[in-house]
Length: 305
Ligand SMILES: [Zn+2]
Image (tube, rainbow, N blue to C red; front, side, top):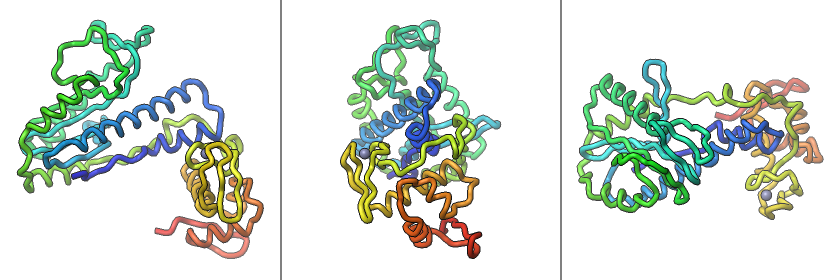
C-alpha cells in the first residue's frame, strides 16, 4: 500500500517553468537536467516495485531532519520483519570508483552515492532510536538505468545494478510480509509526521517578472507556439489540445509558483498570459476559480481553500 505517493517536487516544477521561460546558465541547466533524470529514475523504480507481491507500506520521497541535517529518502518500505530504505540513481553511461571516490568516465568527480546511502541510514537509525522503533533497516543503492556501467565496482550486496534488478525483486518477494500490524502503521504515521516541507526557492537561479518570458505555453512540451481559441488551445508543435480555461488556469498557477509573494490581479495576469486578447476572459477565469478580495480597482484574488 502506498502511504505517501511520489509527486513532482516543487523544485522540479519551478525549474521546468524557468527553463521554458528564460535562458538558464549552464550549471542551472545541468541541475535541471539532473532533476528530470532523477525523477525519471524514481518513476522507473516505482514501476518495478509494483511487481512486489507482499503487503508492505510504502513511503516515497521522505524529507527528514536529524540534528539540523536534512536528508532525503527516495523510497521507504515497511515490511513485516524489516524496513527497506532505497536510494535510487538513474546514472547513465560509464563511471568508475577509485579509492572510494566516484567519477564519470571522463574523470569528473560526483558525490559518492554509497556515502549518501550510509549517511542517510545512520541518520535514519537515530530517528528510529529517538522515536522508540527498533526495526532492522536494510539500505540499498539501486541503479535503474540499463546503460549504466560501474568499473571497479565493489562487491557490495547492497548495491543493485540494472542487470540484477530482476533477481533483487525475486529476493524481495521471498521475504515474508503478510502480517502488518499497528506497530508498522505507527511507524508509517510517525515518518509522515516527521516529513519536512522542502523550500526550493533558495536553490533557484535568480529571476524576475520582467526577465522571464510571458505567454501561455503548452502543458506537455512547454512550447510557446500555441493558438489560444475561445474554447481550445492547440499546440502547434506537439499538436496537443487543452481547454483554454484550463490553459489560462495553468498559466496562473505557474505565475503563483514563480512569484508566491505577488498579488494576483486581472492586469498582472493579463500581462502574464500575453496572448489572451480580452481582459474579460481573464477576469471571468479569476472570478470563477479564485476568491475575490477587495472592491473596484483594488480587487485581487486568492486561492480558494
Ligand atoms: Zn506542445
